[in-house]
Structures are given as structure tokens and as C-alpha cells.
Amino acid sequence: MDNTGIDLEALAARISEKMVALDLNQTQLAARAGMTQAALSQILAKQRKPGGEVLLKLADTLSVSIDYLVGRTPEPQIQDAIRHKRAQKLLTDFVQLSAKDQQRVLDLVQALKPIK
Image 1: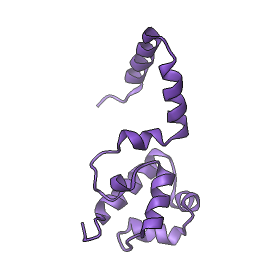
Image 2 (image 1 turned 90 degrees about the vertical axis):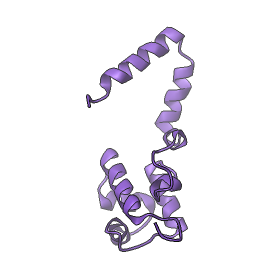
Image 3 (image 1 turned 90 degrees about the horizontal axis):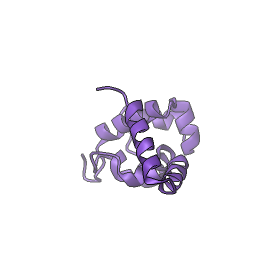
């Protein structure tokens, strides 16, 4: 990590992880984040340190915090997940369910998780 608080290794790894999770290639992510594919490629190759505006665009596009992207927090925070519109709807719907139905949803989520 340099004196700006950006861990380029973590940044590249976390962007790559989120790209896989969201099934995005570099061209798609760059377009959604409003940047060039070349700039994104340089960031992923740890050859370019992005400025604050680029970090904000990437974080918003990937629905994570800037702190997570740059390696300041080890795990995505719950606030990161809540930034997804679908997660917001899910939470809104979930709290309206009965306790029994909430447990059914939780059981289903556990059943869908990959076995480690």
C-alpha cells in the first residue's frame, strides 16, 4: 500500500473478483464505469493508480465501497450489498414475510450455497 492508501494488488484482485462474480469482461466494466478499456487494463495490470473519481465510478459499478476496492477493509461490507437494487428489494420483501417464511428463505439460501 502506498501513501495514498491504495493497495494496487488488492485493487486489481478485487476488481477481477467482482468482474467474475458479475460476469463482466473488461470492455463491459469500462463502459459501465465510464472509462476506457485501456485505462481499466492498466489498473488491472497494476500499472496505473486510479484517481478518486475513477475509484468512485468503479465502486459504484461493482456495488462495493472504495475502502474495499483499495484494500482498506478485508471483506465487502453489508452496506456494499445493500447498494444493489435487487438486494434492497429482497430485504424489503423479506421483512414483510412471517417468521416461518423468513426461515424458509434462509434455509433455501443455505441449500443454494456451494459446498466448500
